[in-house]
Amino acid sequence: QQPVQSPQAVILREGEDAVINCSSSKALYSVHWYRQKHGEAPVFLMILLKGGEQKGHEKISASFNEKKQQSSLYLTASQLSYSGTYFCGTVGSNTGKLIFGQGTTLQVKP
Amino acid sequence: DTAVSQTPKYLVTQMGNDKSIKCEQNLGHDTMYWYKQDSKKFLKIMFSYNNKELIINETVPNRFSPKSPDKAHLNLHINSLELGDSAVYFCASSRGSGREHYGYTFGSGTRLTVV
Image 1 (cartoon, one colour):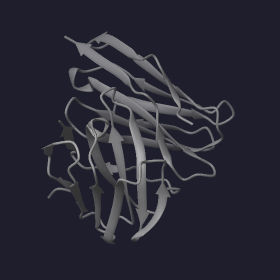
Image 2 (spheres, chains in turn orange, cyan):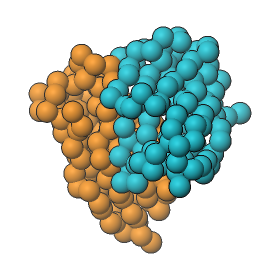
Image 3 (tube, chains in turn red, orange):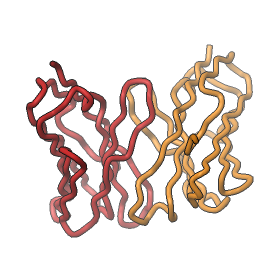
C-alpha cells in the first residue's frame, strides 16, 4: 500500500521553513526520505526506524511516529538547492519492499 | 567513479521491439532493484535481487524479465514493447536484503520512449 504524502506541492522563499508529511495505513519497519531534482536520480537523505527516533541531515531533519505510522520531514531555513521532489518510502514489517509515496514538489524562490 | 551505472541513458524504439537495459554497481551491495517512474513521477518497484536470487517480483507483465548474472549486475529485458512502457527506469542497490537499515543508491535512469 502506497504511503500518502502531504502537501503535494510547496512554494517557499529562501530562508523559510517547510514540513512534509508521510502517512501509511500499514505497520512500518522503517521510513526513508529521498530528494529528486528534475532529470536526475532520487538521492537518499535519511532513514528512520521503529522507535520514534528523529534524525538530522544539515538543516533537514525528520521524525517517525511509529504508533501513528507517520513521518515528517522538516526543512529549515530553506536554500535554493532544496528545490526538488521529496519522496518518502516505507518498508512494511512483513514485506521488505520499499514503497514510495506520490512525492511532494518543493520550489524555493529567491 | 559511478556507483550505480545504467546503460543506455535514452532509448527510443518502436512498438513491438525487444530491448534491454543494463545496470552495474561497484558499491559491493548485496541487493539490486528495478523501479519504474511514470510521467506523474510515481516510483514503482518492479523487481529485486539479493545475491543473484529474485526476492521481489511485483505484478508486472511477463514481457519484463530481469536477469542477474552476478550480484554487481542486474539487467532488464523487455519484449514486445508497448506505448505504455514509456517511462524512466531506475536501477538501485542497497546493502543487506532490503529489510535492514540502509538507504538505496539509484542509477541515473534510462528514459524509454516507445513510438
